[in-house]
Image (cartoon, rainbow, N blue to C red; front, side):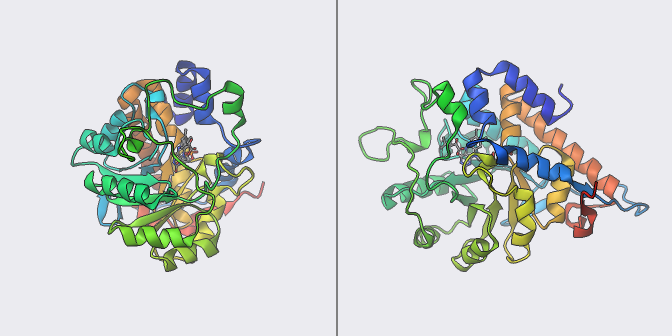
Length: 349
Ligand SMILES: Cc1cc2nc3c(=O)[nH]c(=O)nc-3n(C[C@H](O)[C@H](O)[C@H](O)COP(=O)(O)O)c2cc1C
Ligand SMILES: CC(C)CC(=O)C(=O)O
């Protein structure tokens, strides 16, 4: 079994067709932000405490009333069938076994209802949506998420247009293989067809008001990086924030997310999550120190799924859990809640 997420990525790279690996690993333009997300974590250094007598660590946290077993959730990623024939169903089973949240992408290759069934009652399932220009379509998607038992709605707001992904253009990857579809987009128009997902350039806070009014589920905004937007979001009834630059796939040279999270956590009272470049338990501890309640992982889940299917996702999540536990022990913390801001210093080398 691989010993690190890095090794899972190498295994996945060997197993996947080139165009699939590139789609998953790649980002926008020069991929500056893809690299920056990881590099920014490495630049931060931990200042551990000693002799605090911590025989066991408690990794659990609460999100919207649900207890999860570690401060790591599965960020939404499209097209899991490209990684494994069982696709999102395998991912859901692994997330349920790990006792954490899966944020299912609107661009899943299984429907949200089928993902919920696969995960079973143990899965804390959230649904990620791109607001569509036709409010009726957005409403139907929200109802499907509610009917599937989703516990929160994540609205991605960093994609008014699609990022420029040169690897995909070079590989000619613009559509799913014949016969595979975004199953959440089926039967939305009455003719049994599958609609394309739209990126809507004129999205505004009015759309967020509409969405918040449409559902009792907590709405989480994904893709906020500016503290002023975070404050505005909460004013509009948003109940959580996922600080994200879409894994460097949208605006290249956008700020690394770990560099954005502290300023946001300082100005809002709602749970703040962060994703982008989390590859080690020490990264998670740094995010907690900056005020995040939890982190999201995108590509690591895909590497696990591509390398070893459902078991691979389980192994990736358990690797992270063990690494977080070890990082807490080595920094002198008994729980995720005890991680304090003064554990992290900027690298002075
Ligand atoms: C292959 C791939 C597909 C993605 N699909 C979606 C998506 O459908 N919706 C979304 O909001 N974010 C999507 N993302 C972004 C992730 O939710 C997340 O922000 C990002 O992957 C985090 O960075 P990491 O991969 O370094 O962990 C995708 C990312 C990847 C790598
Ligand atoms: C195909 C898109 C809807 C998903 C994706 O690749 C992304 O959001 O990065």
